Image (spheres, helix red, strand yellow):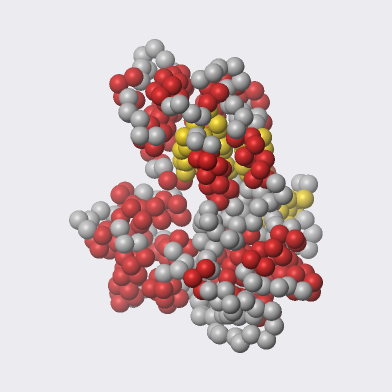
Length: 462
């Protein structure tokens, strides 16, 4: 069981300074809280300036016993900030007495390591979306070309499914860039960024969609002037608005990307109507010249667990794209892009510990090139409190802590040497976090790193 964290007044002051340094404006702090903790900053902490807001945020999180989650979230959101890393290492004491962040020692190279001729400024810390001009993006077996070919088809729909940190947003950005090359209008909406209040009813959510798309396309916002709930339902109003004030106002196709649509799944009535409308739009694109301009791209973390009518769901239409782990040749290609030459034994060991998980692999290769460790030592320390993955692992541990049933279920998975059968919702949650891979009706840890770390940590719980 997790114990409440005791933090001295001096340490709280350091935490305040670290948060201000890591998130220098209210908007960045607000995004971190929303994306990582699903919390609304305005509802938690007020203040006349950033220092006052951060002070009130720390005070509330401490009084409500979620300050350790705040530290986790801030560290995960801005892993490159040295001040925040230092305060996290000083304050974070959770789950068991060995959970102490220690800095990685410098280990001289004695085996395969990064190419010293690669300039440091060309390296990229694997944090979030891979930039469009990055040399470290790995294309996956013609998936990109399939998306591009689908995009140029009238009224098309692309559905991208993958667990977190597998590259969904990076692929979406490349689809949008391809759309730009075709002189299409493009809009990207990340549903993680929406406040909970927007989801409170269908009408408000659809008004938000129409307003947001209008603003992104620099079109006049006529939502309040044209919305007529006395005669039309919310879906009809939204469809009419897109038809008259968006699609007819542009002279090219529109690529509408909706990222993290999983965010909608808990809102049952909204989900059924909204996704039914998207399916209706896709079907209209087959017969209506105006709606042929619409290209829909949806991205979600795992299976859709909400019941939707087969004929009204967009998740059984269009072109499905599933991002899977990198294969061995792609791992070799990624290593070579980092200037690393792997022999067969090293490739086998790397794959055994990390699988083909793109984020885990890139983080390993980043540290190897920076000469912070050798491949052998990096893998030996990977699942320990001293390893390079400790922030990522503790972030996942924190996510598991939000539900005891989920925590117990994953403990069962990592303790077993064979696949474990869980209920469908537990599988959905664990798979969306990227913790497990499915084998028929059973699940196993996604990689040996997760098995080793969580078997040790969960077994040591009181």
